[in-house]
Length: 139
Image (cartoon, helix red, strand yellow):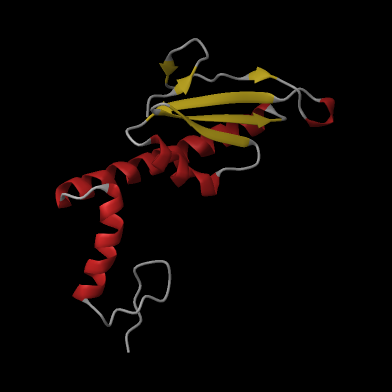
């Protein structure tokens, strides 16, 4: 994660690219663009998608995730950017840890998904998962 795009071509942690636009109700909108570089930007963008709001537009540009955020108030913009950066940090860590796991296992991303599921079934065929977590139902 490299920081926030200042609009001048550089990434600077802590800077914001906030400027007025056309907000709802005739009020000027506040906008910010966050650009961060990643080894697997598509995976990071997809990991962030469930947390994105209607005021956000995240896309991949080469090796970067670019998220444009528009809010009516400066405070709302700051809160949304802060939330996005926290979510981005978590997503980036998870993607990195997953890559380390796959590397240690000698698997590619696509191979790892199907091979891991098959291994789980082979190891414990009585494992009955009852939720989306690792909780199992004991009989």
